[in-house]
Each structure stands twice: as structure tokens, then as C-alpha cells.
Amino acid sequence: MAMSGGKDDGSPMMEMNTTPLIDVLLVLLIMFIITIPVATHSVDIDLPSPSPTPPDVIVEPIKNKLLLTPNGEILWNGGAVDQGQLVTLLQQSVAMPVEPELQFEPDANASYDLTAKVLNIIKGSGVTKFGFVGNERYREFGSGS
Image (cartoon, rainbow, N blue to C red; front, side, top):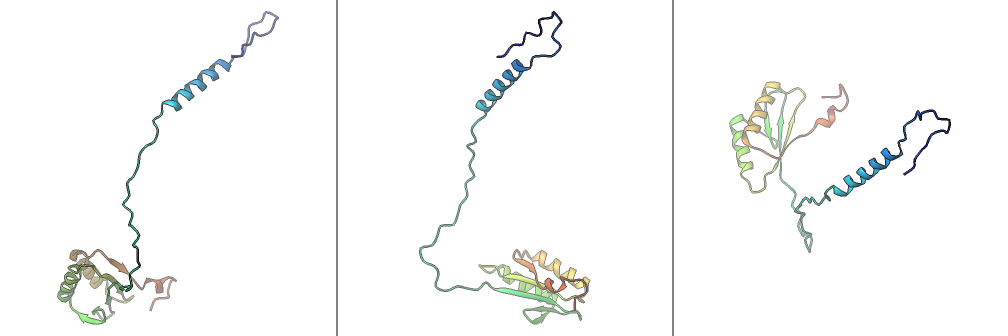
């Protein structure tokens, strides 16, 4: 450690020698670094195993399209249904081994009340694969039909 003796003129030393303080702080820092436990935490992730052969037949997932028209009709894959039939169709699709995707596309001029009712029916049915489609045509303001 460095020591400072000051001047030889007999006047008191006016500045503090900080070298010993820095030395002590460096030793403490090294001690803290040494005592920090090593990070040995691990997160186990179950990754899918690669299949030896790719499947020969690629099965397209089933998609059901639900449209709402401006005149209050509910269309399930192009066929008109009422709210009771919609509940039955949704229950049947949820009960399938692989749940089909439900694509919901209300028309720009469809009734908001009907849209809210249909969304409540969908929510109550327990559908987990749900998406809004057709919104890309409203990307620019005033471009709706």
C-alpha cells in the first residue's frame, strides 16, 4: 500500500490518502464475488423427439367458418343456422378428438348486438381454437365494404 508523508514544511496534510480505502474495497469486492453461489438452476423442457420417417399423408386441419351477414343471418360454413343450431354445432366440434379451428368473420355492416350474442355463445361453448379472419380488408381507414 502506498503511504504519503506530506510536505516537509511542517504544515498538516490537507488531503486524505484514499489508497488504503480502495485496497480494502477491492478485497471486499473479491470476497463477495467468491462467496456468490454458482448459478446451477436448470429449466427442464420436454422437447419433441424427431420422428424417423416423415408422415406420408399430410392431413389438413378442419376449419369451420362462421359468418355474420348484414341482414342478421348466421352462416356456418356457408349454410344458414340459428343460435340454437350454432350451440349444437359448437358442442359437436368441441367434442371431436382434434378440435377444429373456428374462424369468425362478421361483415362490416353486421349487427353489433348479433355479433355480441354470437361471441357469448362461442365463449360459453368452450371453444379453444378461435380466430378472427377477414380483418385485413379494413387495414386502411374507409376501405370496408
